Image (cartoon, rainbow, N blue to C red):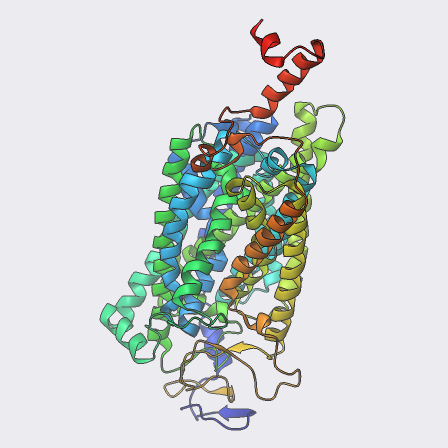
Length: 617
């Protein structure tokens, strides 16, 4: 049954004696008692870790709760970095990206390697040496309190847009393999995550991540190995993807609207991952929990290696999905209701008859979600407590009050994220691309502000504040407008060709859904759109969004800094990158404190007495 073109509409592909697509879908939902047991054991183990660190090996205090006392071990922190970064969005979204658009996205790995070097030698030394709890304390030291509040607000907005997606994606996987509604499973899983994050603090988060990363890697390896055997070997997987045009290199043109080019994947991917790895509270909170910079750099190295491995495995899983369904596209036949259910479909197809293995996969996907959710909640608790509560309380918090406050923050934020899942459900687009695009609203301006602080000594507070606000406004307008155009079909990315000629079941076909279209990776407009051609800025590749936001923020920030220079305080060299410190006239650390001593001495001497004479005496 080959899907043909036409003017659009519905066509029934019905063959006597064949099951319907609904019957096939129900028959594949073989999630049994053993699978539920495996999944439940994963949740129980996470809750048990929270109980251990919250009640048995109990330690109180703000520093202990938020940064683990700054004496965590390198290896578990390294695995926690990987686990918290690889959410269900990556595990399910990356295979979907490869199936729908081809392998060009995988070249972002080169940008990730470069990010590791830049983070290690430019950003990480600054933040680790300052012994911060909230990354945004840096902005107050470097600029002023207003810029710190802006940076914290950007982080809050970004995380609150990201976490509901993190929760929703694995719920889609659970729905595919069990048929259980996403709004039934989501509260159960979130309650467990909120519990162990709330009572156990960073130590519980890190050690649950440590357990979850093995479940994640194990589940993906299992799928890749068993799936490859089922389709006939690695050579079959690569040949089928090569024949369909999916096994490809990125485009070489310089157009900013081409979805994936060498330049967008390297430069756009570099800025995207630099923001996530170098200045994000989620990541830096773990680096800071380590005792010294050397340990933090080792953790970063392991993190980069682990991320490359995970992306590679997920990319191969996407190629495996096409090799399995090359003659019967499950999206066209509606065997799956959303693109990000493709990998769960493959799991039930190849592992469904092996009790316990589908449960292991679902546990792996939810492990990725739980690690990201717990990281986000713990980091948000740190930022809100340090930046929005403590500064406005005249007397210091006692230990008990601080613990209760931070745990209450975690509960409120967790419940709020569960509610926002209803909003994410209405998106109806490819989750990986949507997540990156929405993240750029805040990540671009945030990266711009921090980079001005670390790399540009002449940037001042007024420039950082105005630049950040302009970047936020422009990126909000651009991103929401572009996503609205994508949702209405006014902008869409052409997809790789698919076929339904080999389907062994009957289905209702919607014609003209990118069936046998020539492969093309650029954004194009639908011919029947009534909204007119979108502005060029709306058609930017989603990988350029963070670059665009950061450059706008830095450019406006520098212009404002030049027009309105500030002379009231010289710059502490410890607040800029190590290679820039040598160019500053004052190379002594903690310059602000030294200058205050000089001022007090000057106030005690006679007006005509030189400062140097008084100091020498």
